[in-house]
Length: 322
Ligand code: NAP
Ligand code: F7E
Image 1 (cartoon, protein in one colour):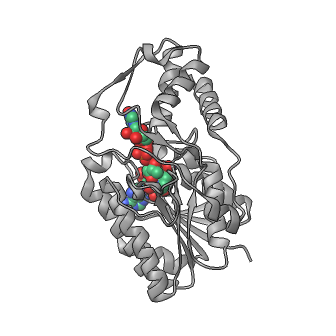
Image 2: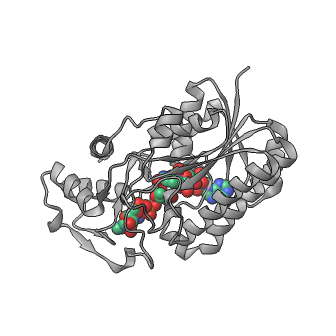
Image 3: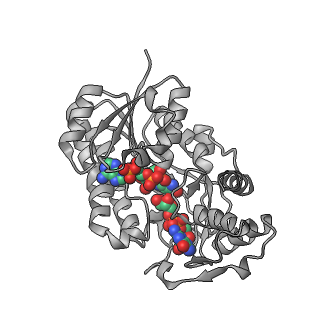
């Protein structure tokens, strides 16, 4: 019989790629969507998939909605991707961020305990939980201490911890994927990769004049969402619940990204990029570079995209669009 997967955050970047991947593997896919006044826009990433998935209205903050879905669907696997996922915006709406990203996970776990205790749960944990902590070799891995530096990171650290707590205390199959930044043509337009690539293309077409950014010196380990959703399914297919870092092990600064993208368009980024303090964060996470040896060895996962290939795919997408 086909496995049943329930995805929260199904309308997001990862939710849409994960849905495609699970449908390809023969799963029946169920998703939770929030009510939104512009449904077409909110569900645009699912446009071609909608006929193959069962979507139900709900919200991580409304436990009754989660109870009803879990009781009806009895999923084999649950992928909790729902979150207020923007780090800078978590300073504007810290309480909503904490309620969704932290208490929402507790709501889900309580519902699972009640309605489908044998379901396997994947929690979308984040490299933002490390904050500015790293090991002596400059990398972050499963054992690196976590000292988050944003309301988003603090909320994700709570959810990571409560997943581990319920795994041990109630014997739930609950796993954390500690994913480093991952991008794609479906990435939201206010994350730095899309913002740079989309605006560089607009500048190259004479449709924009300058690009305003925040800190150009922070470094990120960027992978592709398609590779990272494959890891999510592998994490739940492993024979025991555990925590896994998913990353590329390559790090680049925002300035490097600007340099590469503008030069691919035969432009010099210094002529167009300006720093606007509005985009500088109250506290910055300055360096991320993940060691995913454990995932490679135990799950057999490895990324197919590197930094260059990711940029090329995003550039091609925006060049076609404009
Ligand atoms: P995304 O594109 O922002 O998607 C977030 C999803 O969560 C959307 O479907 C959104 O619904 C939904 N959501 C937000 N608040 C909700 C609530 N209260 N109740 C129900 N649904 C809610 O994020 P993503 O990049 O796909 O990331 C997926 C998950 O991985 C997130 O938990 C994120 O924090 C985590 N993560 C992401 C990265 C990364 O680099 N992308 C790295 C590590 C961890 P709407 O469409 O209605 O807004
Ligand atoms: O920022 C700098 C900014 O917003 C990356 C989320 O998916 O990954 C993501 O969080 C860097 C930061 O991603 C602008 O200060 C400069 O140093 O693209 P971002 P993020 O904050 O790393 C983690 C792993 C998640 O879990 C999150 O959900 O870029 N930066 N200028 C800028 N960032 C933005 N957004 N906009 C700027 O203008």
